[in-house]
Length: 376
Image (cartoon, rainbow, N blue to C red):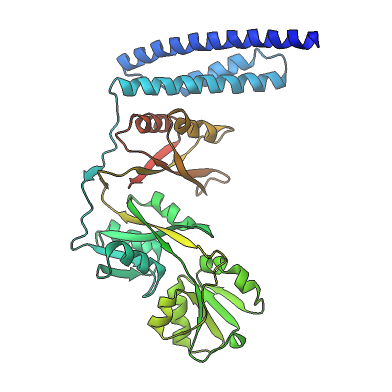
């Protein structure tokens, strides 16, 4: 027992010395930052850091220690960089995001585009956000909607981005990268799915069910009770209802909103068939203009990391060290780069916040690429 106590006392002494040396090192890092600020040098020098880590790793006595030393000093130099970014902000060296601030978004005479046909959930989200009598029109695909605002045919587009049951709408995340359009707000609506067929149809008549792939997933429990039904994916829930109406086949049914049943003269066979009775979808309001409301307090970005171990951890540390609260993180494969991913992050804050400026500065310097998707 005495030997253990002595060993622990020795560790305590070593730890105190590590803290003293770490504090001393950070003090020198501040002086390095002052020099870089005065000379305009970048904080992140990738080649120098890699060389330093390689040299320190060679001091290890075995492979285990080599890995540990590299990991330790990766963290130390990463923390040092974050301190230097903070000092740059304190000296007033700030990169503005170049978004035009407005008191409120101008919807007067605005044209709004949504994907789908009459009765689509996107149309419901549009009317909930812009008003029942807004000037809206529909297109076939989400990509078409992005093209419409890019070309100036529409002022805003309404796109689903995430469902509380089925998860993200991956295609729309990818479109946010492909197009230079920006998120200016969001609208969450409740999603209640109904099974509908032509008038006079009964559950026992149904052989085929049509709907959007996400709606089919969201109603999987109900559909599993009817495994004899064929499930066929279509591009939109309301389009599925329109197809059942147009085909007039008693063996066909659609999963869509009850509004679609009213619009297309169908009969609701079952109400609220989704797995999650609190099912909801978050829609984003997108425009081609780089604008934001003055009181916006949520920022969306996407970035790509260097393809190496620990890269994502070091990127997320910029939020941690600056006390920035992350609200959401998603990943999507990078086209043409097998097993490499880009990350989408929503976080709280405003561009004018010092903490946000520090975090974004670090991400810009250290990510392979960074895009601000909007603030709202």
